[in-house]
Image (cartoon, rainbow, N blue to C red):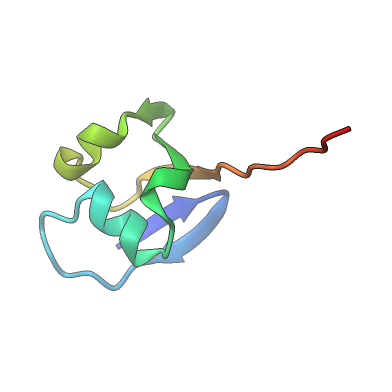
Length: 72
């Protein structure tokens, strides 16, 4: 399966017909509670990841939430 993830073309070796967004996030090594996912231009609610199918040619942006800042 060929996907575009964060602007880079990637080939995912997965032969399952029902490859879900939740599975892809795990496969890529992201911590689900720390990412926001845009699929083909739409932000996907995390509760919908379990039912959102990934298809060949999909375009994803995965943004990692990073805490930080300074205390004065």
